[in-house]
Length: 206
Image 1 (cartoon, rainbow, N blue to C red):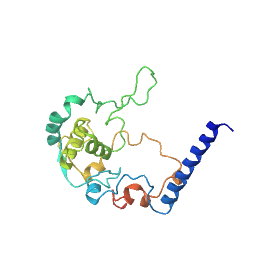
Image 2: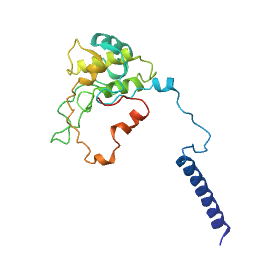
Image 3: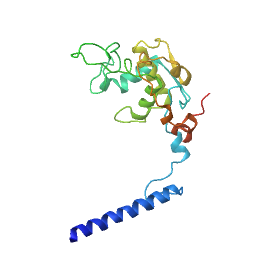
Image 4: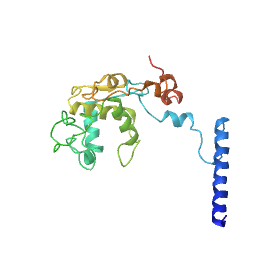
């Protein structure tokens, strides 16, 4: 046996031992001995928002279309365009009826208006990822206001709308029924054991 082959086998055996040790620690309810990472605190979890389509997990607060208009012009228009038509950032409205067509030369236009099935996703994304230069800096009222403005400009809600946890979850998006449900429900955990509920991000289904 060559020296190279022998060394390779010793290295592989070492990796197997480490993997087995980590697996044993995990199975026993402990932590793998990597020496980094911490358990999030209650205050850290409280700052994390991850709403479900039916509105569970949305925070308190509210915002109007008019408030969102002012916020958009100051914090969003430079990337997404003054008419939400896109620019450096994605186009946000328009595109209805373009997702399915018989002309391969016409690409689908995927926007919040034409593609997204749930309005609560808009809150989730803005809250976590926008504005691009300072994600997470908007408070909940500001995020609700921006949701109201974008949905109003997309002609999904009236121009005098106020968005909050209840009204945002009640919005029916144009493409709500444009997705095919997964036909393997047995592959997914029951709602009570979903990560959202186990980690306290959303309350129980009512």
